[in-house]
Image (cartoon, rainbow, N blue to C red; front, side, top):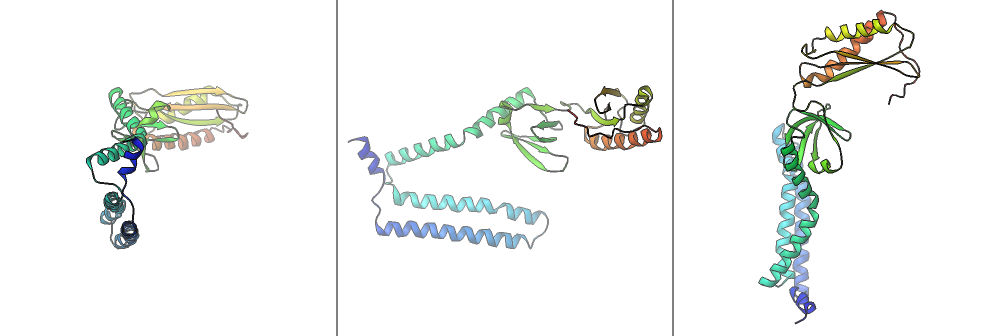
Length: 267
Protein backbone atom coordinates (compact mmCIF):
# COMPACT_ATOMS: atom_id res chain seq x y z
CA UNK A 1 0.00 0.00 0.00
CA UNK A 2 1.41 3.40 -0.94
CA UNK A 3 2.18 6.12 1.58
CA UNK A 4 -0.52 8.23 -0.04
CA UNK A 5 -3.19 5.58 0.59
CA UNK A 6 -1.99 5.18 4.20
CA UNK A 7 -2.23 8.92 4.73
CA UNK A 8 -5.77 8.97 3.36
CA UNK A 9 -6.84 6.16 5.68
CA UNK A 10 -5.87 8.17 8.73
CA UNK A 11 -8.91 10.38 8.27
CA UNK A 12 -12.51 9.18 8.36
CA UNK A 13 -15.04 9.95 5.70
CA UNK A 14 -16.92 12.97 7.01
CA UNK A 15 -20.69 12.60 6.65
CA UNK A 16 -23.44 15.06 7.48
CA UNK A 17 -23.94 13.65 11.00
CA UNK A 18 -20.22 14.02 11.81
CA UNK A 19 -20.26 17.60 10.52
CA UNK A 20 -23.23 18.38 12.78
CA UNK A 21 -21.42 16.87 15.76
CA UNK A 22 -18.28 18.91 15.04
CA UNK A 23 -20.32 22.08 14.58
CA UNK A 24 -22.19 21.41 17.83
CA UNK A 25 -18.93 20.87 19.76
CA UNK A 26 -17.37 24.04 18.33
CA UNK A 27 -20.52 26.06 18.97
CA UNK A 28 -20.78 24.82 22.54
CA UNK A 29 -17.10 25.58 23.15
CA UNK A 30 -17.49 29.12 21.79
CA UNK A 31 -20.60 29.73 23.92
CA UNK A 32 -18.86 28.43 27.04
CA UNK A 33 -15.83 30.63 26.43
CA UNK A 34 -17.99 33.71 25.85
CA UNK A 35 -20.02 32.99 28.99
CA UNK A 36 -16.82 32.34 30.95
CA UNK A 37 -15.26 35.63 29.87
CA UNK A 38 -18.34 37.53 30.99
CA UNK A 39 -19.47 35.68 34.12
CA UNK A 40 -16.15 35.28 35.94
CA UNK A 41 -15.09 38.96 35.50
CA UNK A 42 -18.62 39.99 36.56
CA UNK A 43 -18.23 37.95 39.75
CA UNK A 44 -14.61 39.06 40.22
CA UNK A 45 -15.51 42.75 40.03
CA UNK A 46 -17.78 42.22 43.04
CA UNK A 47 -14.96 40.80 45.10
CA UNK A 48 -12.08 42.65 46.68
CA UNK A 49 -8.37 42.25 47.13
CA UNK A 50 -6.63 38.99 46.39
CA UNK A 51 -9.89 37.04 45.89
CA UNK A 52 -10.73 39.21 42.88
CA UNK A 53 -7.28 38.79 41.32
CA UNK A 54 -7.30 35.02 41.92
CA UNK A 55 -10.67 34.60 40.24
CA UNK A 56 -9.72 36.75 37.25
CA UNK A 57 -6.50 34.74 36.85
CA UNK A 58 -8.57 31.55 36.34
CA UNK A 59 -10.25 32.87 33.17
CA UNK A 60 -7.44 31.88 30.73
CA UNK A 61 -7.00 28.53 32.54
CA UNK A 62 -10.66 27.58 32.10
CA UNK A 63 -10.59 28.82 28.51
CA UNK A 64 -7.63 26.55 27.77
CA UNK A 65 -9.42 23.59 29.38
CA UNK A 66 -12.48 24.16 27.18
CA UNK A 67 -10.36 24.36 24.02
CA UNK A 68 -8.47 21.16 24.90
CA UNK A 69 -11.72 19.34 25.72
CA UNK A 70 -13.21 20.37 22.36
CA UNK A 71 -10.07 19.20 20.58
CA UNK A 72 -10.18 15.80 22.32
CA UNK A 73 -13.85 15.36 21.36
CA UNK A 74 -13.36 16.37 17.71
CA UNK A 75 -10.27 14.27 16.95
CA UNK A 76 -12.09 10.86 17.11
CA UNK A 77 -14.69 12.22 14.69
CA UNK A 78 -12.00 12.98 12.12
CA UNK A 79 -9.42 10.23 12.60
CA UNK A 80 -9.69 6.45 12.75
CA UNK A 81 -8.72 5.54 16.36
CA UNK A 82 -6.09 2.92 15.50
CA UNK A 83 -2.64 2.55 17.03
CA UNK A 84 -0.91 3.45 13.76
CA UNK A 85 -3.04 6.56 13.30
CA UNK A 86 -2.54 7.68 16.90
CA UNK A 87 1.24 7.29 16.57
CA UNK A 88 1.21 9.31 13.34
CA UNK A 89 -1.02 11.98 14.88
CA UNK A 90 0.95 12.40 18.09
CA UNK A 91 4.20 12.31 16.15
CA UNK A 92 3.04 15.19 13.97
CA UNK A 93 1.69 17.10 16.97
CA UNK A 94 4.95 16.52 18.86
CA UNK A 95 6.98 17.81 15.90
CA UNK A 96 4.80 20.92 15.64
CA UNK A 97 5.01 21.56 19.39
CA UNK A 98 8.78 21.07 19.34
CA UNK A 99 9.15 23.59 16.52
CA UNK A 100 6.84 26.07 18.27
CA UNK A 101 8.70 25.70 21.58
CA UNK A 102 12.23 26.05 20.22
CA UNK A 103 12.46 29.53 21.76
CA UNK A 104 11.22 28.10 25.07
CA UNK A 105 13.94 25.44 24.95
CA UNK A 106 16.50 28.13 24.11
CA UNK A 107 15.44 30.08 27.20
CA UNK A 108 15.69 26.96 29.37
CA UNK A 109 19.25 26.29 28.20
CA UNK A 110 20.19 29.94 28.69
CA UNK A 111 18.63 29.79 32.17
CA UNK A 112 20.86 26.87 33.12
CA UNK A 113 23.89 28.80 31.87
CA UNK A 114 22.79 31.94 33.75
CA UNK A 115 22.46 29.99 37.00
CA UNK A 116 25.82 28.30 36.48
CA UNK A 117 27.70 31.46 35.52
CA UNK A 118 25.77 33.55 38.08
CA UNK A 119 25.16 36.34 35.59
CA UNK A 120 22.51 37.70 37.92
CA UNK A 121 21.19 36.72 41.33
CA UNK A 122 18.34 37.75 43.57
CA UNK A 123 18.96 41.30 44.76
CA UNK A 124 21.10 42.31 41.76
CA UNK A 125 20.18 45.44 39.81
CA UNK A 126 20.44 44.64 36.10
CA UNK A 127 19.79 46.36 32.80
CA UNK A 128 18.73 44.39 29.73
CA UNK A 129 17.98 46.67 26.80
CA UNK A 130 15.70 49.42 28.10
CA UNK A 131 14.67 47.45 31.21
CA UNK A 132 16.34 48.26 34.52
CA UNK A 133 15.36 46.86 37.88
CA UNK A 134 16.03 44.54 40.80
CA UNK A 135 16.13 40.78 40.28
CA UNK A 136 13.48 39.17 42.46
CA UNK A 137 13.48 35.62 41.07
CA UNK A 138 15.63 33.63 38.66
CA UNK A 139 13.42 30.97 37.08
CA UNK A 140 14.27 28.28 34.57
CA UNK A 141 12.91 30.25 31.61
CA UNK A 142 12.82 33.88 32.76
CA UNK A 143 14.30 36.26 35.28
CA UNK A 144 11.77 38.37 37.20
CA UNK A 145 12.72 42.03 37.54
CA UNK A 146 10.94 44.76 39.51
CA UNK A 147 11.52 48.18 37.94
CA UNK A 148 11.78 51.48 39.88
CA UNK A 149 8.17 52.14 38.77
CA UNK A 150 7.19 48.89 40.58
CA UNK A 151 6.45 47.09 37.32
CA UNK A 152 7.03 43.33 37.22
CA UNK A 153 8.94 42.35 34.08
CA UNK A 154 9.75 38.79 33.02
CA UNK A 155 12.85 38.71 30.82
CA UNK A 156 13.55 35.48 28.89
CA UNK A 157 17.00 34.05 29.54
CA UNK A 158 17.35 33.61 25.76
CA UNK A 159 18.24 37.30 25.50
CA UNK A 160 21.64 36.27 26.90
CA UNK A 161 22.54 34.95 23.44
CA UNK A 162 22.45 38.31 21.68
CA UNK A 163 22.15 41.12 24.26
CA UNK A 164 24.54 42.36 26.94
CA UNK A 165 23.34 42.13 30.54
CA UNK A 166 24.57 45.02 32.70
CA UNK A 167 24.80 44.07 36.37
CA UNK A 168 25.15 47.19 38.50
CA UNK A 169 26.09 45.59 41.83
CA UNK A 170 26.95 41.97 40.89
CA UNK A 171 25.98 40.39 44.19
CA UNK A 172 27.32 43.22 46.36
CA UNK A 173 25.22 45.20 48.82
CA UNK A 174 26.53 48.52 47.46
CA UNK A 175 25.86 50.08 44.07
CA UNK A 176 27.59 53.06 42.49
CA UNK A 177 25.35 56.11 42.07
CA UNK A 178 26.09 59.15 39.93
CA UNK A 179 24.68 62.68 40.21
CA UNK A 180 25.41 64.97 37.25
CA UNK A 181 25.90 68.75 37.39
CA UNK A 182 26.35 70.94 34.29
CA UNK A 183 28.05 74.26 35.06
CA UNK A 184 29.10 77.39 33.24
CA UNK A 185 32.86 77.18 32.54
CA UNK A 186 33.63 80.39 34.49
CA UNK A 187 34.07 79.03 38.02
CA UNK A 188 36.65 77.78 40.48
CA UNK A 189 36.91 74.07 39.82
CA UNK A 190 38.68 73.07 43.03
CA UNK A 191 36.01 74.78 45.13
CA UNK A 192 33.20 73.06 43.23
CA UNK A 193 34.83 69.66 43.62
CA UNK A 194 35.24 70.17 47.36
CA UNK A 195 31.67 71.40 47.72
CA UNK A 196 30.27 68.35 45.91
CA UNK A 197 32.42 65.98 47.98
CA UNK A 198 31.08 67.63 51.14
CA UNK A 199 27.53 67.15 49.86
CA UNK A 200 28.14 63.42 49.44
CA UNK A 201 29.93 63.07 52.77
CA UNK A 202 26.99 64.63 54.65
CA UNK A 203 24.30 62.48 52.98
CA UNK A 204 22.45 60.17 55.39
CA UNK A 205 22.47 57.46 52.70
CA UNK A 206 26.25 57.42 52.16
CA UNK A 207 28.26 54.26 52.72
CA UNK A 208 31.29 55.57 54.60
CA UNK A 209 33.42 52.54 53.70
CA UNK A 210 33.36 53.38 49.98
CA UNK A 211 35.14 56.29 48.24
CA UNK A 212 33.54 59.51 47.01
CA UNK A 213 34.77 60.60 43.58
CA UNK A 214 34.15 63.74 41.54
CA UNK A 215 34.89 63.41 37.82
CA UNK A 216 35.20 66.60 35.75
CA UNK A 217 34.90 66.81 31.98
CA UNK A 218 35.19 69.98 29.90
CA UNK A 219 32.83 70.20 26.92
CA UNK A 220 31.93 72.77 24.28
CA UNK A 221 28.84 73.88 26.20
CA UNK A 222 30.32 73.96 29.73
CA UNK A 223 31.77 71.77 32.46
CA UNK A 224 30.24 68.47 33.47
CA UNK A 225 30.70 67.25 37.06
CA UNK A 226 29.85 63.68 37.98
CA UNK A 227 29.55 63.03 41.68
CA UNK A 228 30.04 59.29 42.28
CA UNK A 229 29.37 57.57 45.61
CA UNK A 230 27.84 54.44 47.12
CA UNK A 231 24.70 54.30 49.29
CA UNK A 232 24.41 52.00 52.29
CA UNK A 233 21.99 49.77 50.39
CA UNK A 234 21.41 49.33 46.65
CA UNK A 235 17.69 49.82 47.22
CA UNK A 236 18.43 53.42 48.34
CA UNK A 237 20.02 54.42 45.03
CA UNK A 238 17.21 56.68 43.81
CA UNK A 239 16.77 58.47 47.14
CA UNK A 240 20.55 58.85 47.33
CA UNK A 241 20.81 60.37 43.83
CA UNK A 242 17.88 62.70 44.57
CA UNK A 243 19.53 63.80 47.83
CA UNK A 244 22.88 64.46 46.11
CA UNK A 245 21.23 66.35 43.26
CA UNK A 246 18.95 68.62 45.29
CA UNK A 247 21.48 69.48 47.98
CA UNK A 248 24.28 69.81 45.41
CA UNK A 249 22.28 72.34 43.40
CA UNK A 250 21.46 74.31 46.54
CA UNK A 251 25.12 74.46 47.61
CA UNK A 252 26.27 75.56 44.15
CA UNK A 253 23.60 78.26 43.93
CA UNK A 254 24.54 79.59 47.36
CA UNK A 255 28.13 79.85 46.10
CA UNK A 256 26.92 81.88 43.06
CA UNK A 257 28.00 79.16 40.62
CA UNK A 258 26.22 79.52 37.30
CA UNK A 259 24.76 76.47 35.65
CA UNK A 260 25.18 75.76 31.94
CA UNK A 261 22.35 77.31 29.93
CA UNK A 262 23.08 75.96 26.44
CA UNK A 263 21.26 72.73 25.45
CA UNK A 264 23.52 69.87 26.41
CA UNK A 265 23.73 66.89 24.07
CA UNK A 266 25.32 64.59 26.62
CA UNK A 267 26.83 61.43 25.11
